[in-house]
Amino acid sequence: MSLLVVGTDGPVAQALGSAAPLSGVDEAVRAMQEQRPDAVAVVALPASAGPIGALAPAAFAELAAGTVTLAVMIAQQAALLAQPVRIVLICPADGVLPDHLDGARSVVASGLTMLTEVAADLPTLTINTIAVADDIPAAEVAALARHILSGVTPSLNGATIRLDGGRDAVLAAETRAEGD
Image (cartoon, one colour):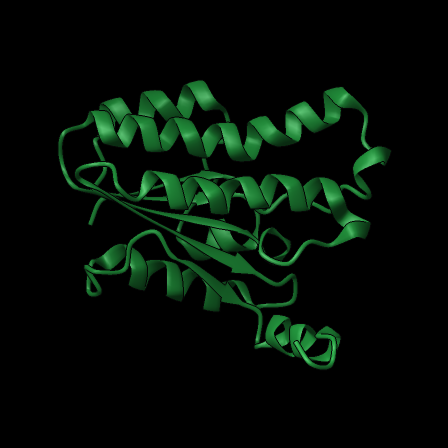
């Protein structure tokens, strides 16, 4: 497997074996074209950005460019390679269950989960998302990402996997109205 890691630098990227992931869209696109990897990990784990209204438009645009735009361009380039490519998007868990106190990060993370849904039908492309809670160890995230990228489960495509210790399910059950 030839793995390309792009996106947010930090413990998850390092656990995937990347000293410094490519974070710019242009450099990531160039790497896709030159290296022609068969596996790509897009680490989109930005720091907390606060409520949606607390972030200046330029800061939100930068957040979106480093996460959603980067992932879209990687998926597009992978589809153009005309070879099988497996992609895993690693994003905050609040892309599945919104966090109103961290609304900006929730919005970009939900964009990544939606990209997984719409890009899963592209020929030669397999794409899945890992929605990660903040306190999950980087080694566990990397192990799951490697499993997904290995192709051991070829039918796994278009899925969003919550890696949160079951907390979202518990929260949903606790907040469900009686009689629903």
